[in-house]
Image 1 (spheres, helix red, strand yellow):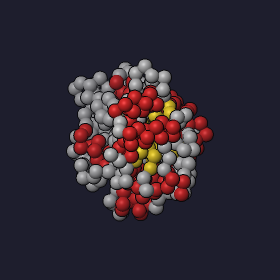
Image 2 (cartoon, rainbow, N blue to C red):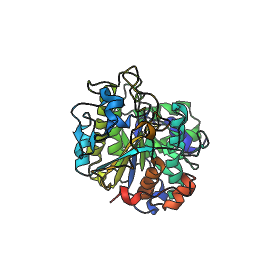
Image 3 (tube, helix red, strand yellow):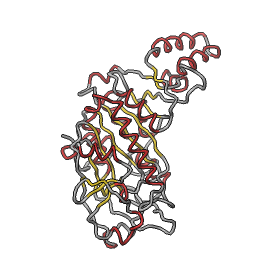
Image 4 (tube, rainbow, N blue to C red):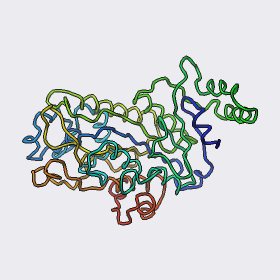
Length: 378
C-alpha cells in the first residue's frame, strides 16, 4: 500500500499536509477554490442581461423581481446579496455566454469533461487542476469531500476530507487510533507517526453542509502550510420544474446557498482572500425558453463567476451573442462565445505561475486557446 493511499483511507475530518516542492514555485501563497454547481446553472436568471430585448418574450416568468443592479446592462439574482456587494467592491467578475466545448447536454458526460478538461468526455484519467499541480510542483496539496477527477494528477494529490466519526471530539485522531488494532506492527509505527504529525493540525467541524465546507476551506487555505486547492460541490441545479422567477423557487434557494458559500469563504479566508481565487463551474447552461413545468431544460451557454482579491472585478465580461432565435445555439440555447477553458487557464496561470502556452498544450491539449489573464486579473 502506498503512503498516499493509506492517508486517503485512514483520515477523518480535515487534515492538512505539505509537499516540499510547493515552496519552490512562484507565489506559493496563492490558492484556488472551485465551486462545482452540479446540474447545469441557468446563467440567464443568475446573471441577467437586462437590456436583452428577447429575454421577456422567451422567459418572462423566470425573470426574478428585485434584481440587484450591476450596471445599466446587467443585474444579479436577488438571492445573491453578499456576492452583489463583493462585485460592487470589484472583487468578483461575472463572465457570460461561456461553456466548455461540450454540446450533448448529458450530466454524466458534461461533468466528466469539465473535470477532466480533455477534448472529449472520459478521455482523461486526470483532471485539469491535477495536471497543473503536476507541472507546477511534482504534485500538490488539495482538499475536497472526496478525490474528484478535477483534482487528480498523474503524481497524485494528497486529499483530506473523508467522513466524520460520530460522537468523537477529535474524529481524525480518534479514527487513526482505532485503526492500530487491525494494523501490522510496521503499519502501526507509520500510523503513530501520522497521528503525531497531524495532532493540532486538524479541523473537526461537524457541519458538512456547503456552508460548513466553505468555512473549513477558508480556514484551511488561509494557513501558510494549507492546501493550495479546494473543490466544493453544490447540487440541485437541474431546474426542470419550479425554477422560480417572479415568485421565488428552486433557483432562489440554490443561488442563495451559493451566495452564503462565497461570503463564508471570504470571511474565513481573512487576509488570505487577497491571494485566493474562486471560480464557479457547471456542466452546461439551460434553455432560453421556459418549459411547460415553469423550469428550463439542458442547454449550452451559461455564466461563471471569478472572485478574489486579485480579480479585476465589478463588471461582466461577455461577447454577447443575443437571444433572437437565429442567435441561439440550435435555436434553443444561449450560444457560448467564450471558451470556459480560457478562463480556467487564466486562473491556473495566475495561481500556479505557469505559462499560458504550457497550460494550453499540456493541461487542456488546445495550443490555440485564447489568453484572458490580463482581462480577468489586476
